[in-house]
Amino acid sequence: MKFTIGFEKEDLRKLHEHWDSIVETHQWTEGKFTRMFEEKWSEYNQLYAAAFSSWSGAAMAVLDFFDLRGKTVLCPSNTFMATPLSVVNAGANVEFVDCNRNDLCMSYEDLKEKIETYKPAALWVVHIGGYIAFEIEKISQLCKDNGIILLEDCAHAHGASWNGKRPGCWGDAGVYSFYATKTISTGEGGILVTNNKSLDDFARQYRNYGKPDYDVAGLNYRMSEFAAAIGCVQVDRLEQIVAWKREYASKYLDPLYSNRVTFPDGMESGYYKYIVFDPVEKSTGKVYDTPCHRIMKRDCNLSNTDWVAKNHWCPPLYYKGDID
Image (cartoon, rainbow, N blue to C red; front, side, top):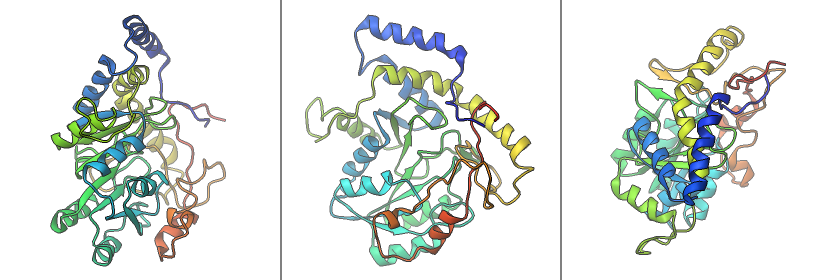
């Protein structure tokens, strides 16, 4: 199965109409399509939503809002380097937490130990592969009990839900990515979701140099109107794309791979990845080949993370991808 971007050809006419409108109005940024994209995502996620030019920009806005400079932020090592690098670039200290072998996400048991050791101000939990971290309820409660800010890295999690609840709803904020390979994409881009109106207001200033009053020391993380128009079309297709991937996984992949990630009752995956624990001849590779603590040369014992890096594979699952 060859990689394809989840985009329907019949949406091209609508997209070009949007782009023609942008060109004609001469408002190529900070316009109606950015607002429309945010409104659509807010309705989908049932939270405030602020669009950014990247996942990183949204993450930096969140970290700055909570004033984490000089403080400790916990992070799983089984993630993309963007997650710990956001902490480093926010001037905070990152410490790593082990993952579980069944869901590849942050381990609640190891998290309890790391909270005792490092007394963190915040932590990132990462939803891997298109589904939701299996222990998110316990992690969320643990953070509330200890006064820890919970941030959700939702970069993979488009289309996921657990008993109707969307990623980003458990924490103080969630950040999605719309990079080119994601289940739905704007080419480059991200979106910050939160139930905190003050954070949403801050984020909108942060992405635009702190305008209008410059009380916020932000930079340029604005999403262009052209990218936002793609996002508007894509959000409308999200449920269809995810439904197709779920049907394909159930019909063609589940019968082949019994030793795979299996989801708790009530959880639906967006199937950004299909993860199995046996070698796959035509695998698309690993979710992550090298743990972040190895890349950053940290001397810490994260045995499950090291095991996962060596013992999972991803059969291809691309929306209507061509079969080899």
